[in-house]
Image 1: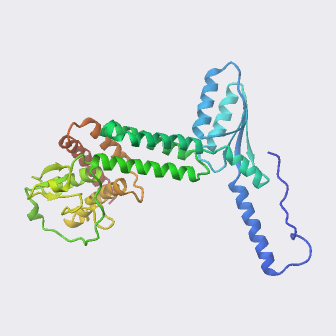
Image 2 (image 1 turned 90 degrees about the horizontal axis):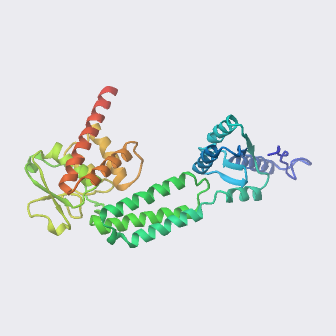
Image 3 (image 1 turned 90 degrees about the vertical axis):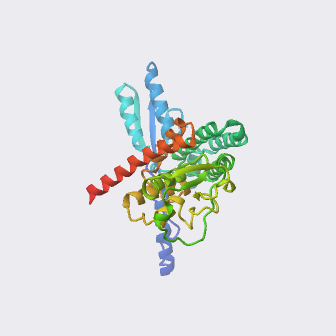
Amino acid sequence: MAASTPYTRPYATGPARPLSTRLAYHYSLLCDIYDINMDAFDVLVLSLPTRNSTLRMRVWRALKQTGCGVLRDGVYLLPAAAAGGAGLAKMESEIKSYGGFAMTLELKPRSAGQVAHLRKLFDRSAQYGTLVQKMTATRNLLARLGSRRAQTAIRRLERAVEELSQKDFFAGEAKLQAVAALSELKRRYQETYAGGEPRFSRRSLRQFNGVRYQKRLWATRKAPWVDRLASAWLIKRFIDRDAKFVWIARPSERPRKAVGFDFDGAEFTHVKNRVTFEVLLASFGLDRDPALAAIGAAVHFLDAGGIPVPDARGLESLLKGAKEKARSDDGLLAEAMRTLDLLYAAYRSEMHNDG
């Protein structure tokens, strides 16, 4: 917390050096300055009033939520670049208003050893380890839990990883292991309850005549989720308004004259980097509608990952609510139809106003 002494090198003074040596020196000096700035910490030193238990609990929760490291009793710190740094100043002000002592300071370690010591205060390896153990236990119980309870457990673990990641300022191998374990758990869930996602095909996209696809029976895998629900909505609203749907456990169960979508070997399924919803858009010339394209981007992110889409998580939450409420695949589609109708109308209105 004391001011650091100026940094010097053995050849900072003395006889003139070759140009290449002097350039290397100045470059390394800039790197040192950058590293020091990256390893700066904000510090909160505090002493709370002894009889105010409410304040103690509030401060404890705030420190835990921001992910502060504990240097010693009453001394807490965060990396200067952390998003929660502004919260320390807010806590300082609140503690003082209740008659306690608080002071925020800037800490710049003088050596790599000090930096390493401080970074250890933010080691989340044990917490990630606990989450991985829970993921392993959930994976082993998937078949016994049932689809809904398993999905609820996975959502809780996913939120826990996200929350921990926000406080993992020096992420390392432990986080990678936790993310990999979560991906494996999701994959096992899909194998157990969704019949497996279709693989991406390398075939070329082509245009289809919509007249051939009127009043048809459309088949897809049972327990539909984002891509299948959105594709069914698109079919019903823009391709075949009299469409009927059948939910199958495996491709071999597709009725003979039914149009298959979103499973391996289906007439409409993943092609190259496009999910089924995007394939349907392109196949029937609907990708020129910007509102449908916006929904397609959200569906792609939720089904295959990639570039984040701001509205995607909101859509996912609404569909999760619909899945909790529905008692059948037909009921789930009916709820999803309403959700996607509203989303499409909102996009249309927003784009009309912007235009």
